[in-house]
Length: 122
Figure (cartoon, rainbow, N blue to C red):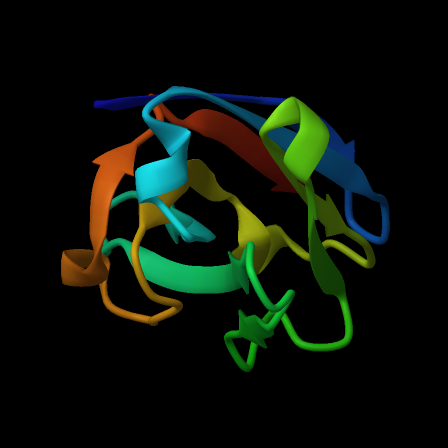
């Protein structure tokens, strides 16, 4: 089992920045990929970004490219999502996820954090 605790959400004005954190514990060696997803009210949970621990490969959704950066700290089993130039459409609950491969579909991830709310005001 892998436990994930995500944090760092909050209220920010459009154009601002936030940094989300995800702390992993448990059998973390079984999960080589970490990702961030988000879910806005009334919408499906969607992929934002992912990172492969082994090779450092990253992947981003089109909406995240150029504005968000995913990074990891292997020694502390932590993953971060730096979000810049935020827009109101980024408002959602953001979830950290752990899995075995970098992928954009939810089914590829076995473990999920509890979510952290990000609200971007006009």
